[in-house]
Amino acid sequence: MRVIAVPLALALTTPLAPLAEPAEKTVWRVGVFDGSSGEFAGGEPHGAVNFVAGEDQPRAAWYAFAPVAWAGKPAYPMSRPRSIDFSIAGRPEPAYRLKVSLLIEHSSVPALRVGINGRLGMFYLHPRLDCNMGDMVAAFYPAYARAEVEVDFPGSWLKTGTNSISRQAVPAGDQGVPDAGFEYDAIELHQADPVPTAGSAHAEPTVVFQKHGASIDERVDVFVRYGQRPRSGRVELVIAGHTLSEPLHADQEFGEESIPFEIPKFAPRTQAHLTVVVNGHTAHVEETLQPQKKWTLFLVPHVHLDVGYTHFPVGFSPDTPFSRTE
Image (tube, rainbow, N blue to C red; front, side, top):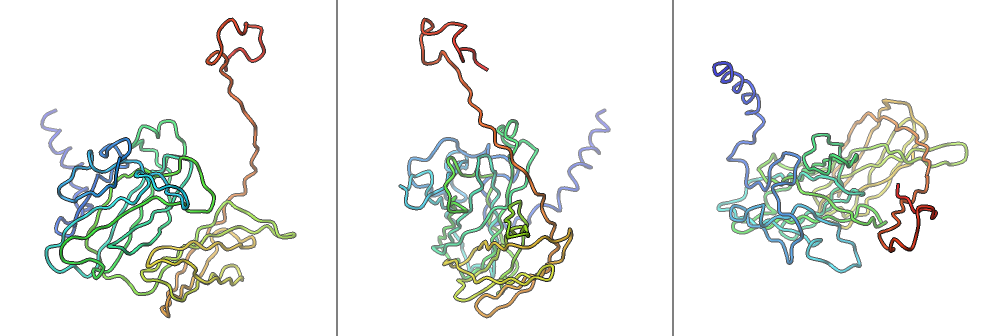
């Protein structure tokens, strides 16, 4: 058994080597990309979170859960932006990539606001169900999911000396959802290829349908990403003989914008063409879209009664209605 174990270990570890990022290209990493928030501190911070890369320890200085910061409500320490401060000794590289891995363990999917030395941009999450049970909550929460966001930006946004990159959970829509937020899995900054000037786009069919007369249209969300403030811009979607166009609205220096389109019924594996124009720069994207399933929801009211927690035993008997727990 001892002879066999050695080559088996080599066989298991060797394929993993090419997946690792070269050490010289990684500026810093906080946490481990393992689908778990276990390496971070629990509870909530009592003040601003300013993590210093290379000095602070994640288990003591970076907190796992980040609740959503709602506009118009008091800014609690737990929902404020959390920054990672780091130093660059020489001249910054031409471009960098920020990678953030998040876990969805609550009843809503928020968005992520990123700040890079004062520049702010919002990014949407596209979580996928995760059955690996990185956190224990996955054992009983069927919607447990993981989402990754990668943000490319030019090195001119950094400077020689101290820099700061912040992250904050913000609402993705107008309606508030109690207990909304996400858990951190890991965060990393490393060098990247130069950032393209033109924007990009991605279309996602949804399970939301709207009836217009005899037609039932499916909502398709188009996510437009840009690396500069869109002083002027638009996105155009061509699909199944329909051409739709909407202007860009977001007032931010970089990030993503979500634009909904209502599309009449289209066949599986339909080709779609996206055109993004940002500040005179044009990008074209071809995608194959799959319509989503129409669901019928049945809402059943349910009440769980535990009589006895708030009354003395003499106040009821086994024959009292609703005196037995489920």
